[in-house]
Length: 291
Image 1 (cartoon, rainbow, N blue to C red):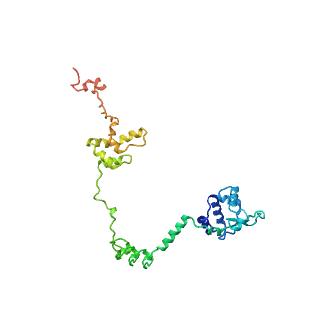
Image 2: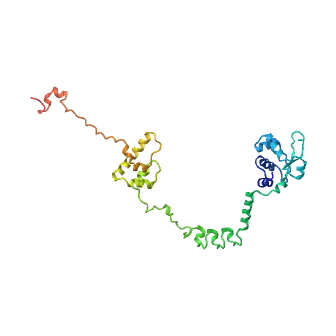
Image 3: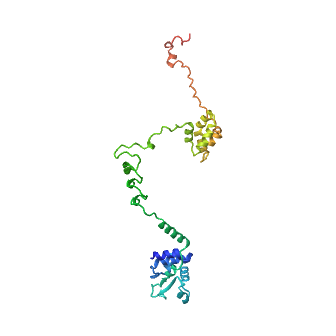
């Protein structure tokens, strides 16, 4: 494998398509001089992802058509050994014309990349002080080594924080962990919006909420669960926005709530005389005994 030859093929070879693929595969197998190349047609075809006959045809197109072209160097590959194939199992020995690659300029994009790389090397900052080796800043004081900040006090060299207490001192909790005293409590609108099964614009929903009279707000909050349940039972997977629910007063279309029915009190018949009392009237009170 020759990385140098592969790089030259990628950056300089004036071919494209299958010919470029063939040259790149062959460059992967040769040495830096383009020699020691013994490809078999089956292996070349498999590496190029083409048929054997097509790989053979492409390789032949990169070889000299006659002695004149070979003498002029107008070729990419040529056979230098085992022209007839040699013994069974042997393959032809090829040579790649690496010198011809050097005669072609680099492609435009690769040339631009080299220019950017050279410009970056030429404009690299020089005359940096010894502190710059660790901090990347010019004329940085020694205290900047640990903190990356100029003129940091001694405590900041260890912690990297401004006004940090000495090591071992109790740390004050971060402000994000302290309860906020300026946070406004949630009102009825916030609770209603939180109960709504879908995302909505809080600003638009708040405008629709403020446009409702107080009684309608109470009814809107009261009917949220029933409105959602009615839509779910109707097979709707998506519920309208909370803004539309408020602005169109959609809870009014819900069926009227069933009125609660009072259970009827059982009417008890006046207790009559028991069989014993009917048989023995004397045990009954005087007011109950008929004359």
